[in-house]
Image (cartoon, rainbow, N blue to C red):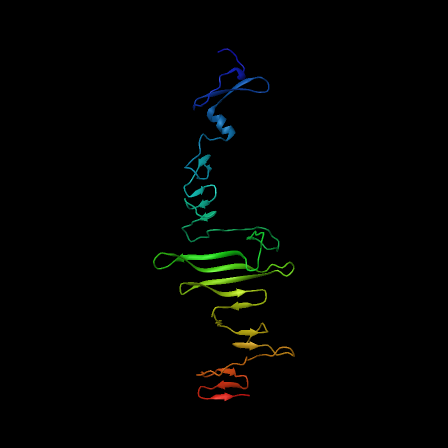
Length: 257
């Protein structure tokens, strides 16, 4: 075989596993390399593994793929082959599905999950983010049983307020049951408060079922709003009819003052 420069050699359009390539280095010394060694040095594989949309990964030195690890250009699926959300994760065990760890030794808040509603026209009442808790009912329908929602209370610069709402499925209907605003925790839509322990009003160390702090010159300990007399009062009930404070002992309604 007569000596030729690489630029004078015939170019091929496909490669075979046994092909050997000639290389000219900077000292004009001609060397050779096999196809497999060339691929290894360039970290190039002949073809991707798996099927379309399956994400490639290093599988013991070769390209690997899995039908439950996919990206279709919009949706990333982990544990699912046909994702329907931008990030769709399906697990089958009882261990953590998502685990986030931060090793910073400082006292600042961390790990942090930041949810932002990027709106050019923000308004009071805008939703900022929502957690939904979903399951099935007795005929296999998908049901959202509970939701935690963050909203904008006030968008005014310098006096911005936020609020958190909790909603539950009640008798088949979504119902907001509580709202935490900047000024109060509100139980709404007919929901009451049941407490097993003590309730302290104006204090932090309640020692009775209902323990009320001492009144002040600006705040009384307890206030009864004027209302109608109950038609069938129960024992222990107390009310103010606008004129008298009354108490029912189970038999008789007693005028206290």
